[in-house]
Image (cartoon, rainbow, N blue to C red):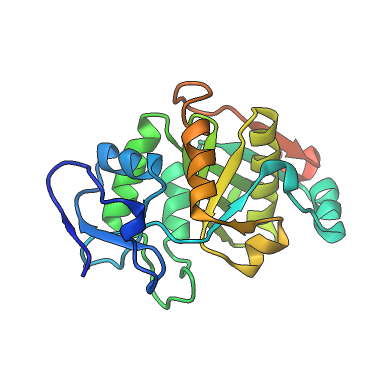
Length: 240
């Protein structure tokens, strides 16, 4: 059995999280900014199917990416240099979430990003905590990802691609930008081969929490991110 949360955003100790399914900690609560931020500050995130109770997770081990460990394959490096595209941050947050909602997560057939999740994270975006990295080609949003930043900690949530490598282009630009701003860790939550190929690795949950506690206390206050970079400008955007 897992505990049912009350009206205030207070979570049980992570040591009480289940081993199977890995990291399931509690149910209930809400998806307001107060609840979501409290969860992330303690290494917890919501994940549940639409129509089910809110479930809160903290898996062990934890999949992470240290920004300076990003791996870029030769083929991806070539695409980064030569493909015509634009990367922007925070110009189409809800659209990115809606596109991600059509992408099944972790082997599921359906989506977990329902209207309540979208509204909750859009509220965080309005407060400057949630961010999108977007890949645009010929004026169309073709790939991207979204997540939450607290201090110098970034929590990746989901990504999508409507063209080959579009989400990877956004991801690489985001990771490099985060590294330039002294972000120390990117939370990837669960292991996937896709993230491992980009340099992600699993670490013990206790080590993850040590990193998290230090990083969320550093950095700038929440704000909208400014980033707009075009590669192959004559092709990436439609001519006026």
